[in-house]
Image (cartoon, rainbow, N blue to C red; front, top):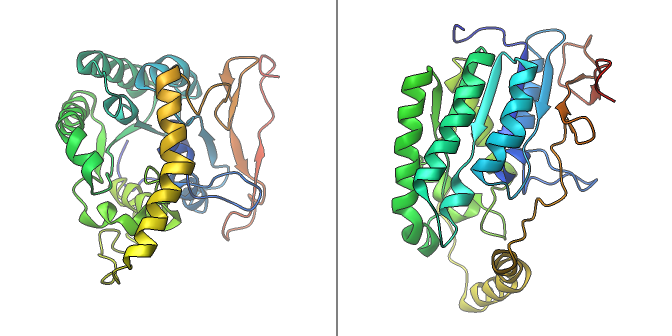
Length: 283
């Protein structure tokens, strides 16, 4: 596929980063970078189709087994694959297994789509990053190797200092804010060879230092509402994604389905999506 083409379909697979947390909408759903990218691509071509199969908390083995197959069956113009970071943040991580599952997912997707897109994910500055940096950078080196083997594009978010700024991250310190997701969508858009809307790497204005009491209150809230539950799930082997399916995935049939703009005849911004009529084997 040529860059700067009129892409007619997009499938996104991965974990919470691609699902869209924490870019929340009033109805409790999320609208992350993949949704923003799809809405923007849809304005370029009639009949655009989109499917987001990502599920929070998923490890790369689950992404490879549960999402990559369903995504490949749709044969999209563009497929994005982002995964493995959840694995690297676990105390015990077999990086050889992570590499193998990433290779499996990329090997399944690349022949089935027009353009595979991989990512070097962003990372919030701080002690957590410092502890797990070697694993993350090993993962990103392998992603570059995968891209070379499969003709994939790589969106390098890790090297953008602005995405390490704590103001780009939600109070859970694990997921990007709405502005962070908007910048990621712009980065993918530009990597696909499409005309830049703005400079997604542009730094934020200088930060105003918060007082000790504010910082302490923020840390206590984080520990109570986010860190404690996260540790609890690690200790019990549970995941925030248990029992969940991707937004455009039918658990009963085991198949993904397309959505398309509800106002497809309108050249303006996408205001809503509807499911395409399913094939006979998709309920």
